Image (cartoon, rainbow, N blue to C red; front, side, top):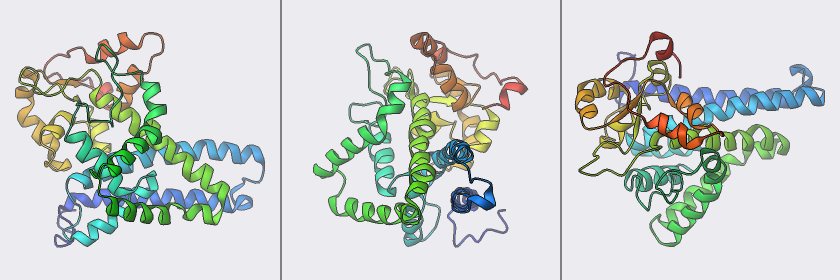
Length: 322
């Protein structure tokens, strides 16, 4: 892959995987639209068949859209994929619209708000805090954060000048132009196979990831320098999710390329564990499943944040699960 990728086009050869995943995501939407628009050929003539198709397709499209924006574009927001600025600008515009976001807004929320104010008062991307300092229930966060809280805070930051007015409206205009295309073709298709997957992408895929990344964590300080994030060491999860599980390292060194994070983690693992870093031997999905209990969410949080054996590798059966 390194030998075949033109270095003058991509900043790093490994980023071709990011572009391929995005192309796959758009192709999946195109296939779903074609099936909807050709019900006789697709066997979707009856109402029950269409309902079953929407239920399955919207969930799968939402799942990959959440990865495409929350993980894949996330890497582009920190380190540009292309060498040329105009390519990066237009790639971003045609990237996040398939996840329900203008690129500038998502990048601002993640880099300027979240990374720069991690777990602080101005980090409005994370769950609200209870009086005891713990996060609100995961279900409340999933249902409330997007688009309601995000929209309110983005509007407030635009009015306050923290997010430049002219840039915000220009990029929002490009977003609306691209995002509205499915509704021009078929409004109901736009609702069930476009808007609904984007709600699932943000509220389920990205929302649960944001929650588990920092659940039970505290702001960076001299006493707790690395308890600001949780690390997820499932090999299968990281190999299929652009190494997003190395989240402690990512927040301390956001300029490290996603392809370098496993080696970067191995070099600093003992040091991080000695400083109190919290690592678990599974991925985001396993963490969200553990934290989503309705019987005793506080006990689930305590179990999740409990210290694991330093440096231990999960069993093979567990390492290959997310």
